[in-house]
Amino acid sequence: MFSVLSSLLCISSALAVNPITVSGNAFYNGSSDRFYIRGVDYQPGGSSLLQDPLADADSCKRDIKYFKELGINTIRVYTVDNKADHDECMNALEEAGIYLILDVNTPHQSLNRYNESTLKLSYNSGYLQHVFATIDAFKNYNNTFGFFAANEVINSENNTIAAPYIKAVVRDMKSYIKAQCNRTFPVGYSAADVASSRWQQMQYLNCGNSSERIDMFGMNDYSWCGDASSYTISGWSTNVHNYANYSIPLFLSEYGCNIVRPRTFPEISSLYGEDMCEVYSGGLVYEYTNESNNYGLVDISSNGTVTTLTDFDNFKKALSSNPAPSGIDGAENKSPSECPAYQSGVWDVQPNATVPEMPAYARRYLSDGAGTPLGMNGTDTQNGSWFDVSSAASEDSSSAAPSTTASSSSSDDNSAASSATATSTSSRSSSSSSHSTSSSATTSKHSKNIAPSKPGVGMTFVIAVLAYFY
Ligand SMILES: *[C@@H]1O[C@H](CO)[C@@H](O)[C@H](O)[C@H]1NC(C)=O
Ligand SMILES: *[C@@H]1O[C@H](CO)[C@@H](O)[C@H](O)[C@H]1NC(C)=O
Ligand SMILES: *[C@@H]1O[C@H](CO)[C@@H](O)[C@H](O)[C@H]1NC(C)=O
Ligand SMILES: *[C@@H]1O[C@H](CO)[C@@H](O)[C@H](O)[C@H]1NC(C)=O
Ligand SMILES: *[C@@H]1O[C@H](CO)[C@@H](O)[C@H](O)[C@H]1NC(C)=O
Ligand SMILES: *[C@@H]1O[C@H](CO)[C@@H](O)[C@H](O)[C@H]1NC(C)=O
Ligand SMILES: *[C@@H]1O[C@H](CO)[C@@H](O)[C@H](O)[C@H]1NC(C)=O
Ligand SMILES: *[C@@H]1O[C@H](CO)[C@@H](O)[C@H](O)[C@H]1NC(C)=O
Ligand SMILES: *[C@@H]1O[C@H](CO)[C@@H](O)[C@H](O)[C@H]1NC(C)=O
Ligand SMILES: *[C@@H]1O[C@H](CO)[C@@H](O)[C@H](O)[C@H]1NC(C)=O
Ligand SMILES: *[C@@H]1O[C@H](CO)[C@@H](O)[C@H](O)[C@H]1NC(C)=O
Ligand SMILES: *[C@@H]1O[C@H](CO)[C@@H](O)[C@H](O)[C@H]1NC(C)=O
Image (cartoon, rainbow, N blue to C red; front, top):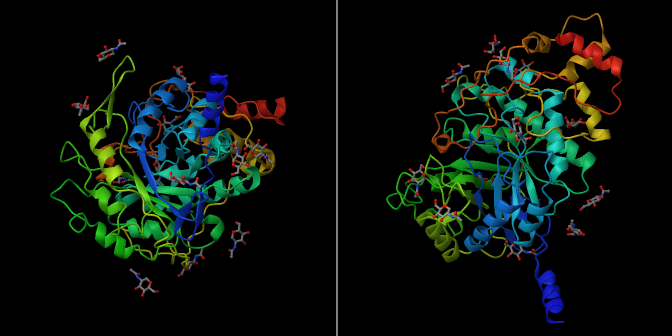
């Protein structure tokens, strides 16, 4: 009797979280107060290990114990396997009152920022199938906070031309969510700390047609370094002033400079205090596990044992001494941004630049769904997708081979692909090695462009497509 009663109590005490909603420049979770992100970036193994931390229920539950001890309400995950089962981990997170902000890319399925042609090639139907199937994998969890369409794609002065492609991915994700999900999710962008164009990035992604605008902006910002810095020295006071009119929620998707160690997180009193809470909706500390770049809150030994580090205690203390404000201070409905002016070498995007059209083949996903997820080992889409080759071929079989065939025809080359994109960046935030989603495949085990099974694709069609490649 007692155990029945206690298990009933246990069930009823489990938290069910409300979906996050956006209104004006603020987040809400079903209460009349604003919702502030109090989180950590969760990337066990570091940015170089392609691993889904939500697929392993045991390690996930092991870590949730520490998340609860920290008192966080959100984690950010950079890469998942869209084929894996996430139920156990996501439900355990929900019981702990923790939301997930998810990046939808992998190094094999992402925009290649290198130049106009690599951008064009990497934005294709195979890539979008991956993105949409990733949304499918998380759309039924109430604690899925929202999605990042891309992370740090613009990481230098010479790749601002990627901006319209980022916007295209945002638009496509929003269209997919509208068509295939029974609730809405904020779709955002997580920006590198590229001082020269951060303002333009914020404005551009929040200007123009509402169907193409982001719903939230995350900035990776490591400019407050220890006690010698301050709200003003870090430049954060200037940001608060400059971004005060931004019409959508703004938060730190990575923070926690580690030049001064151990970190004591003095910035947290500004972030959740009067200094910043009107303009920012909190942030996520980089990062949970200690990796070679030395940003960890805990150490995980090879046998899976967790040891908390000094930063863990310091972060926990800083959070508990700085509770999220109650109320709706700063929440306002403001106008979207103006599209920023072209400035050669700084912002190489015309204010009236057209956002690339969704590839024709991919449009069927909006009505039919994305179909079978292909997982982390799905075909690398950076050099184009057979879907687009095939749909072009079926539209006009006598047409010249589309540009995708040129690169795909080298598909018998089994040598480890060398990166076409600089994976390291010059910005401060990249020294944190957050997984850059626009890097091209580095050690991709070559996967041939075998057509994945898709409903409605006949065998002769597949053969016709394969003929392009061999
Ligand atoms: C999600 O929340 C809604 C209402 O907030 C509720 O009706 C629904 O049952 C919840 N779904 C799950 C899977 O918990
Ligand atoms: C909203 O989130 C906060 C912070 O996690 C939590 O304390 C509060 O209970 C939540 N409110 C609702 C209505 O779920
Ligand atoms: C873009 O970069 C690719 C890969 O290095 C190269 O093959 C191509 O010629 C470049 N295109 C342009 C327009 O510069
Ligand atoms: C809405 O989401 C729930 C899970 O929360 C799912 O069971 C249900 O099938 C979905 N409804 C529709 C119409 O997609
Ligand atoms: C862009 O600049 C980076 C250095 O910031 C450099 O490594 C890269 O090669 C440049 N890209 C092009 C296409 O010139
Ligand atoms: C905004 O985009 C939608 C979808 O692409 C399109 O139907 C609509 O015409 C656009 N509106 C304007 C004002 O350009
Ligand atoms: C914000 O908007 C107000 C009212 O329109 C304006 O006076 C102010 O200059 C704007 N601030 C910035 C930093 O753009
Ligand atoms: C974090 O890991 C790095 C690399 O293994 C190591 O040098 C450093 O001492 C670790 N940090 C802490 C606080 O244990
Ligand atoms: C796991 O590894 C840690 C550190 O390497 C060690 O202290 C601990 O005893 C090990 N635990 C088990 C169960 O082997
Ligand atoms: C953008 O504006 C410029 C002049 O400001 C004009 O020459 C160009 O044709 C316009 N492009 C588009 C796509 O509307
Ligand atoms: C991907 O392939 C590698 C090598 O074959 C394998 O070790 C790994 O488990 C696979 N990952 C997934 C998520 O399927
Ligand atoms: C993509 O194309 C480039 C240039 O042709 C090549 O170096 C690279 O290996 C290709 N990547 C994949 C994953 O096929």
